[in-house]
Length: 107
Image (cartoon, rainbow, N blue to C red; front, side, top):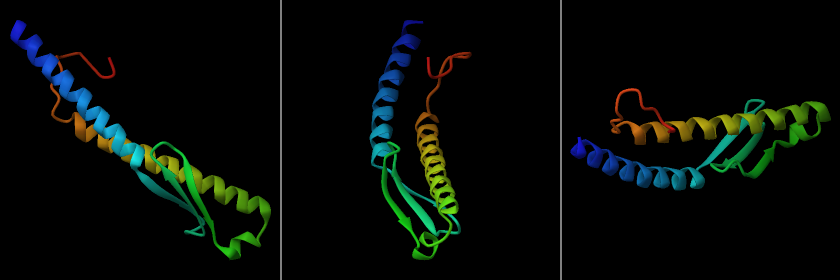
């Protein structure tokens, strides 16, 4: 039993290091969300900070309400992409972890 606990502690330490590494990678991540067939693009970091908004000139002269909708849709697309890539990185990191039956993360 003591050996199992020691092994679990080693796994927990490795998990903590891997999680920190994954969080750092996610923070450096940049994704581009798009709407209107690429007419509006939003660049967002893994921390959900918007770095850039690009709007095609043809859209800028269109209806203001439509432009607002396109910007909101591009931001939502970027958020979805950040969440998807974050989940993929975390899932890959935890693939080798062997938890006791019934134990789930987060604790």
